[in-house]
Length: 488
Image (cartoon, rainbow, N blue to C red; front, side, top):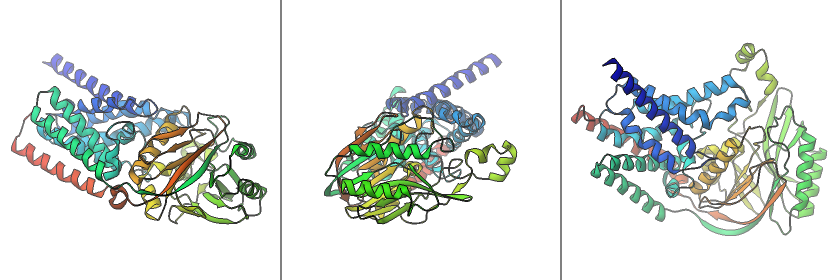
């Protein structure tokens, strides 16, 4: 009996690891989206007829297999940080599993709801949210992607997990459950097809500048003047006529305010040469603090609009519990992040003479609420100036492009992503990547995009209707389990 029990645990552990690894391989940069559906389809057999505590640990193990490979880039910053990150984010999968009812039919119903809830929760906590390696990211290339304009990433997660439950039910020859799952998917896709997604109001000729240079370069070790000069040199390839030139995040670094510096003078000269506003990412450093912003500089020399980044990167732009962590690390934390960014407080828009631009700076593109803020305040195009030059491999950069695709679908807007060393990209409102640069290359992406107006349901209502539906479904699943106790 003991051998049988051990064998059963080994088989279950194998299924948990297999499920998690399948989901991990569905994430960008691999992007094999069907694997996420296959991985989640293993969940009913993994969690059915087990105690709540056991469900948590099997879910946590599946989460580890999912998140250990897809967050491996954290090793380059801190091995202990990598271990903590993977373990903490995996706990969300464990908590989702613990919230499941007992019994196979109820489990089929509840899994989409708990996974959507868990994915939303880790976009909020800890430290304001860490929405990396999400199920929604894995599906930007799938036929399910359009449902995100109904209810954002939450709804896309629901659709993905529902497709997985339909697959699991079909494999188990539970045809009623499989048919119900397919009907839900069909209904969501039909609704997405008729849901509002905005409308064009005018063309805009844009140029997205990528200066190039070495990858895996941290700000404290980089030559700010060389980065700036690379982008000035790359901008010589901007072709006219152009209505807007977009530079990446923090490629203009100054001590004190930008006004009156040689960098500002060079940007004014560039704007005059191309006869168009230049939107540049700046860092203004002061004793003990700095500001990370995007500014609009016009040919006449005026800075007509500014947006300061609201959602800061934890342990990148600010350090929670700095004093305690410095004591534990011997000051290493403050060597890498010597001061904290001052968060902005204004709406996520930049006013230009060619229209109102929504803006999400770097990390903010992972948060659908930041894009909603930009569009609800009048953003006609969504800009994502970013800096991925610190990161090892291309996992983060690929996931950022996927997030830009999600934000395009959710908002019904063109998205322009500009990075100093890649990836820079142009994404159309249907989530298609029209252009993308390579890592470290010097490039200028020219594209005619369209300023757009109108709100999708995702922008108008946010994730709340989808989350409310998930809660209702979870309650129904638990009631179903109570009526059919012990069903596996």
